[in-house]
Image (cartoon, rainbow, N blue to C red):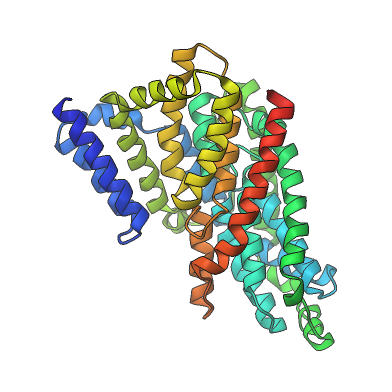
Amino acid sequence: MSNHLIVAIAIFTITYMIIMSETLHRTVVALFGAVLMLVFSVEGQEQAVHHIDTNTIGLLIGMMIIVSILKRTGVFEYLAIRSAKLAGGEPWKILVMLSTITAISSALLDNVTTILLIIPVTLVITEAMDINPLPFVITETMMSNIGGTATLIGDPPNIMIGSAVGLSFVDFIVNLAPIVVLIFIVNIFILKFIFKHKMHATDQQKMRVMNMDESVAINDKKLLIKGGIVMALTVAGFMLHAELGFESATVALFGASLYLLISNIDPEDILLEVEWPTIFFFASLFILVGALEDVGVIEFLAEKMVSITKGDIATSSVVILFGSSIASAFLDNIPFVATMIPLLQNFGVQTGQNIDVLWWSLALGACLGGNGTLVGASANVIASGIVEKHGKKLSFMAYFKVGFPLMIVSVVLSYGYIVLRYL
């Protein structure tokens, strides 16, 4: 065993364990681990930069810029208040409305951005009605992960998989949207049973939300119209990017630059709102996993996987689906998927088989597995942080009791879907 191999495994393992422990900010830890790979000459600087998936990075930055401008219009607050009023102030109907908006927004934007926008608005409504916000927060967080599973840009694991494999926006919708819709419906019905005793409101409480004026939420109609045009062009671009010969990052950055151009907003203000810690976290992970690939760890793991499953696609699909869901429930699904992508690519090379079903299994397992615990996905952690800032506490166990059983239900449904459609 070479020194570089030992060093690479040690750095990756220690970095990963510290990220899991959440004792230090994950971006700082990942960045330091990536730089250590260079310091100990596991890989060269140019080689490390080559491992960074610029398509994933560009797509994230582009969408963050678009959303940063769009949220200034107040459209997300408008949609939330309007939905609550359409529901007649009934807590359960409000929850269904907001959850539907969350799932759709997560599919068209991304789940982290959606949570950042929808949870504060939800808290305004629940505070106005003086009802417990936790059922709303838990449900919306889960629906953000479920909705994000349906598209290329909805959840970071999908962005990474699509970029690495060359899967288009349409590929994700065609292959994952059908089962995502079913999972959404099943989860909503189960959640209604779980929270049925916490979904009551008096007539006075209902009137509080009915008296809210959604029209004042929209503070810049011109910017909203421009944003609608940009979003329509961007979504159309995602759907057609494979046929047009463009990468998804090109589409997102075109939409972002166009919106910046016609918004007349100081770009410095918008760029300051980009989640740069998330961007650097991704870039650092690509370098860390790339180092493991360079020293042969990924190829070794792929060989072991082939030997365990004997190269059988059906067996491998089950292992990946359930294995990735459990792993993603307790680990952050981003570093897990970053590690799995080159592993599956090596698996495909070694077996010489079409492994498309394994990518769909990984996407479903990693995205839905994030619903299992409070630390399973970035959206969950963000939702918990927002709630705490508003004086409420969403504990690990309170979420786990609801999230983990429903995650298992979702994965079982996914297994049935994969068997019926692909195997």
